[in-house]
Each structure stands twice: as structure tokens, then as C-alpha cells.
Length: 133
Image 1 (tube, helix red, strand yellow):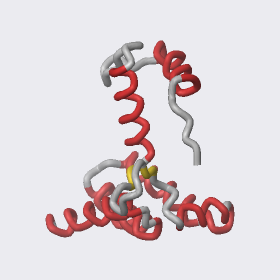
Image 2: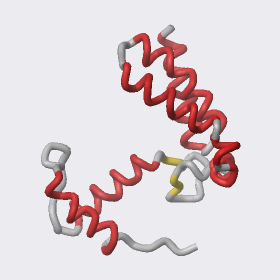
Image 3: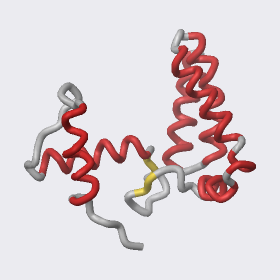
Image 4: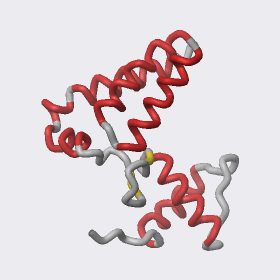
């Protein structure tokens, strides 16, 4: 059983790193029973709703679904095959690194609150470099 769970996590990581949308959905679907069995009801409910929306995307948003099939549901900061990263991870890494290095203010998980929303919004609007294709 333990090795099955490890294989499932490896499948999910492989899906995100390679940008394989179908494998991502399959691995997410296989995680549902584990969320339910471990009592993580919020994860179970959110994951089920996420899967419902993503599986209906062919009908509701075919252009976005096509983009996701091409691997555009992950962020790639390099051209390497295994370089896909989840968007929330990239946002956290870029935001944290930039705020620690440019001396504007220091964020930690403890002091993030409503008072920092203005500076964070300002940071994203003015300080991040613009990507050019």
C-alpha cells in the first residue's frame, strides 16, 4: 500500500514536471480516495470540484483545454523537459526571492496579513520584469 502511494506521488510529480495534462488529471483522480480515507474532507471536496471543472473544460473552454493539453498548465523557467513547476510554487518562489533580495520588505509565513496586500500588489504591478516572447 505504501509503495502504491509513493508511485502515485511520483506520477503526480512527473505529470507536473513534464506538463502532461492527462496524467495530471489521472493522478489527481487517484488521490481522491486517499484524501477521503485520511479525513481531509476539504481536500476531498475541493479536489472533486476541481476534477469536475477540468473534465468539463472541453465543452466549456476548448481553447484553454487545448493549451493545457500542450503543457501550458505549468510554468517553465527553462527549456528543459523536466522543468515544469506548479504556478503557486513559482509565484511563491519569485515573490519571496524578490522581496528578500531587493530590500523593500521581508515576508515570512507568519507575518503575511491584510496589511501587506497593497505592497504585494504594487510589487507585481511595478517591480516584476516583463517576459517578452
